[in-house]
Image (cartoon, rainbow, N blue to C red; front, side, top):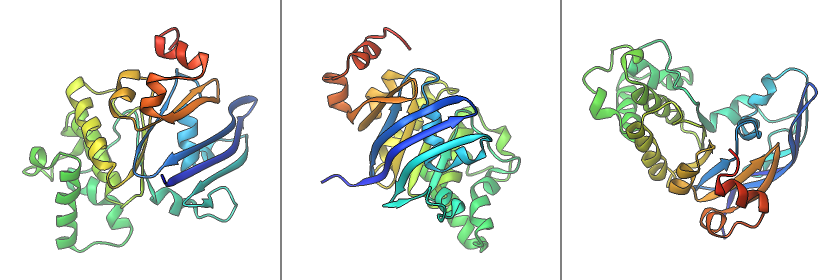
Length: 252
């Protein structure tokens, strides 16, 4: 039986007067790629942010419901937000390397958690850059600024930095939208490999990308979940008429 890593129950979110998420109920299977799919402005990114409580940064918000991570509600008023976020590496639309060297970008999270042995850090840098398929490209220039890398390389560096804090989940918010096709393929291929060790949640409105890599689909429209389920079933036998229209390209 498939284990669920995250379970969202009756999640409702209003920011000021705008109703962003409406009675969201869904499950995120463990060690699979779950794609949150839907047109722009449907609430995909907000749902993703709610999973590591980045929605706490919004002012004038009203939130209700529960998000259970490993069976524990992270909105119970007790959960340590930093601990929740440590379990989730975040990859944004545009890469955001820290203004420091490639080496220091990867070791940043390790250092602030107290792991500072030079030998340990050196081994970890190599390990995570290899995980992100970047080691061979940068191994001879680890002390150069991260800003000197191409956009595609910067995104893979951000992936390595996120993996270095040993998360259980990778949250990816349209991580290939700013990349060229080759760099996009490199990220997609890496996600397919990494799902053997991590639960991956990917936001996209790109149907082709979802078809290529998704194991599970959550389809949203206007703040609601319209349909969810196994990716193959979703694409071959959609149940909802709105889903069928979206897959036909009637709206985006």
